Length: 512
Image (cartoon, rainbow, N blue to C red; front, side):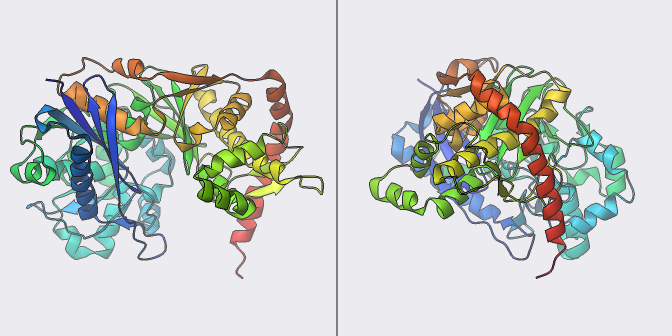
């Protein structure tokens, strides 16, 4: 019997269920979306019941689509979006219909109060939590304490996104090291919750779930879960991991120094290594890897593909319409237009910070801009400058990783933006690294979860199998003369970043 695995990629926009064979080949995928709720400014919530419904529906669609013999399915695992805070009582009942997700920033007051008791730099150097502090789980739990006393007093455990689904699947309440590392009170180097950070929060460690390895089998399906999914009750469930670390595994970051670029709506560059990359000034965000004794450290920009989409909607609406009418990808059409502009876009620069700044940028209020625009510039220059600006902005934050760790000479690219050959070449020229596109593309998170399941149930002996699954489709090598152009533009681009941060800071103080 050819044993199969189901991997779930529980993302911000929905859940993707994928069926894998024992060799790691993805046989089919289905997707089920769900809504994000915005009850007040800064509040971003989702319904855990919607996550579960998406698991059920996408699983049944997958089984119907593939007509697989369900008796061949051996194991499953999840990759889940980070910083979830799902409160449940002793009976396992949800205490809130909707719960804050990773991007929810309601807990600013709680974070500020916390750092009156403990040094923020020490907190960062202990946890590696490099997103804005108010996003992390501990501060959202403290928000429950301060604002919803009835909820807080009935809390038995607060668990993450994929851990809630694991609870629904098995009845077991566990988390793994990668997900726990985003809770705000986790000590990276000691691989455990920090008693000092917990004391400062006033929370008891018992409110957080027990931590086990990502590959550990936490149980088999309950009778109820098996009936809901249409699977045998004997199917095993591995603990799984946080999305950042599962994606790192799926993107071949299985040995120290390997690095990948995820190019989607936002973008980040992550390196996996034996030690976390920590710097109190630039604040890379770090998660414990799903691979034992490793870490994945990343730098990011908040606006990559979404800035490029903004360019399409506002500068190329005719191409958007043409793409819709001819069933083409509008980004392919925009790329073809950009190719008619030379490297450097005729000295036109674009800062893509349309969604504000990450921790690696000058400040949170930085905003986007074109600079150097004159009457001679064309629409092709605007589009190429957009692609180059995103690459140069990522090149700026990449310097943080280069400063603290040794990187491989090549970088795997995953995500929707990886499809563009022009963009891959621009990244190669800006980074002066080989940019590698493989067959995995947008499935890195799913492959990471599948690998955890495969090892957990004994189908694979180790993580080296991931290398065999990746088939290299193209390698963009730096073109010397293009790299020289970007080197000349780099100091001017840094001037643009700095000035846009100053301007954004000033604009944020103006009430209109």
